[in-house]
Image (cartoon, rainbow, N blue to C red; front, side, top):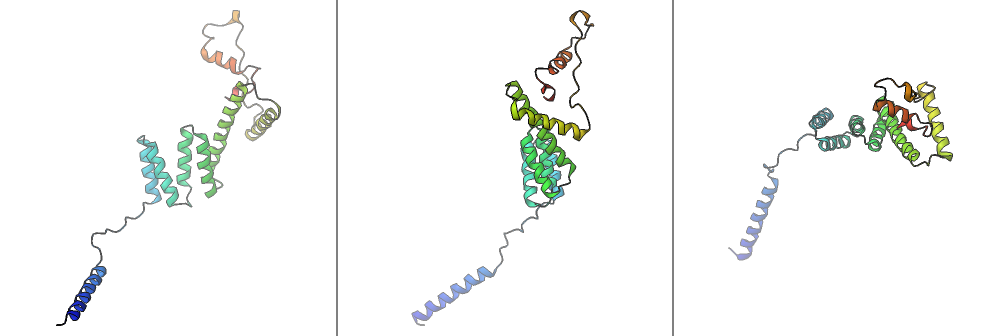
Length: 196
């Protein structure tokens, strides 16, 4: 045999081996596991939250929200968890995501409303404590109070505190810390103290 023929046969044999190797399926690759169902994600997140693994629960819910973008359940659960931890700004954001998917959801609307009120109450208390609640800010707060009274059907948002009895007429046990706190909250100097 000629050296050129031998080289050609070696090249052909190497090419055939290479093609055979490419045609053989990889036996070591396992099939990709199926994505968990939304019910499974919610169940796993709930179990993590009950076990005190807050961050893990939030991560699972965020993945669930990404895997099932049309469903409100992960967003609503995240909003509830944030609300329960007093993280009202985040709770509002997650509840708004749930409302984008279901505008009539009462729980999401409640989380937005109550979280907003708690944030507003804190801000008003801070302003009041700094004696900076005046002008347009004061009138806006009064307008919001009127809206709240109309919404809940009450004339008074916060019932007035009972006046403590006079010092000489005080009954035994009536000077409890709770009674003193109620008297301080009803102070005319701070009309928004009852909203704290």
